[in-house]
Image (cartoon, rainbow, N blue to C red; front, side):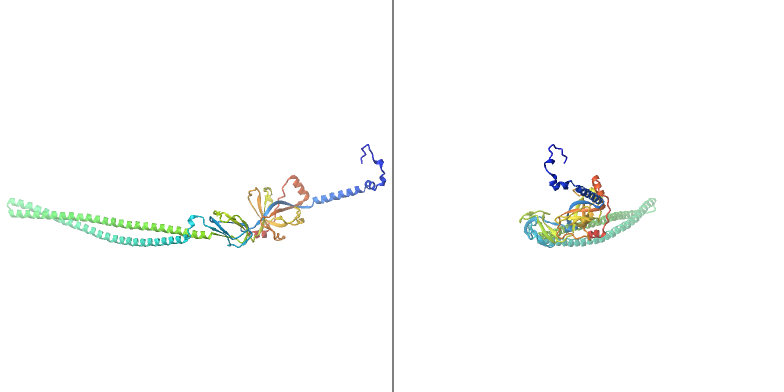
Length: 452
């Protein structure tokens, strides 16, 4: 006590009667305090040089390793009216089991005999195509006959043209001969007249010469007329030859045009048949979509549509099926600053929600209730939350993850990095420095396991 007050109480009672004053006034507690402080200082000093495992902590959740093991949402393929449910939430279904039955709502599919009627239309189209084929064969036979007839007619016209040319040549030679005879007769007639004037020939000789001249002239004119007729016949033969070619070219072109038209009609019928066959196939497949089946084996976890008689659109959600067998993995997110520290195969300590655990981030061996994992994959781009997604799988040599884990459960992760002294870790945190860059050893076995 400092005895600063004017009202001193030391004189009012006897200190010897109280043992507590003796104990307080002794110096033993000072020695004990000094030893305690020394021991504490030594412990703190030792603690500062203890190894500390740097780690990056984050939060994530349980997912599946393979996409087909995750909850599968079942959708409707076609629009329809919900008629009957065959399952309820929590039911176990095998792949292919019927889940829901829906009925048709589109008027173009109401006909119950739609498939049979479409089949009949396809049969009619097939018969029409066969009829076109027979017509094409008949036209081709007609075309062949026209081509053969054209060849014969052309040969006949050529022979006739050749005969006309020969006849023209023959009549031309005869005309030249008759013209020569006419000139001779004309000279003889002139000579007979001259000799008659000189008295050397008689008038009868002159008359005979005149008669012969007239006969020769008549024959020459007749031969010239005959030559002209032969030339006209040659021209007519040439015209006939040209007409034969034009006539049969027109006939052949007409038949070929008809063949092309029939082929076009046949191809159009074949196209319509293909469309009908496509429609028939769609009708048959559509009937199979009236019953919605389970895409895989698992449990019905959520019914999105519940009412009977509801109208469904194409691709609308009906329910969710969770596969019964799956490989668990942990999906968590890290800050971009910690991205360079992550490597495939690095170790991760996991604390699952619902499982009690005592966690010492820097001393993973002293932690209780945590489980081991290895990094399998790291995204090379940020997610919508601005962080990088990391996927971890169980370690083979660590204890197995609890059997009661379910997809979607929360997880706290501690990615283990480099071992440093506690003093260095305190200094790093006080200065705001990131953890040291650490190259982890990739476990090829775990990576191969994730690829299976």
